[in-house]
Image (spheres, rainbow, N blue to C red):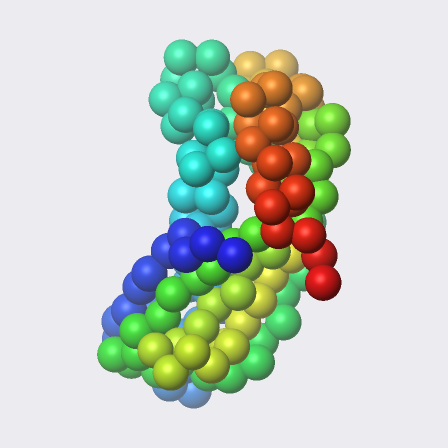
Length: 139
């Protein structure tokens, strides 16, 4: 796994119970995903230049421990599966004490932003993701 995002919990990110609310977990995981795919070779400028991007189609989230105001956290990410047009990734959110607070498995589809349809993942990204899987076999 590689660290793909670091953050801190701000008061505006908490709910009535005093812990970080779901929308900010999802936002942090989303940002981690963008850093992960950039490390695999996706260029964020392709959104404008090629009109190609990613659409998340499935999230499975497990919440393990609360994050409160001022808590520092990091997210580590890994590739789980590479398909023709989809990528399955896993992201683990750890607090500063390295306690697992939440994890998500995401399925994201490479997407034609004009035609609004899936499209094959570019070879450079697919090859990088497959190489990542070879270097980090599932245990």
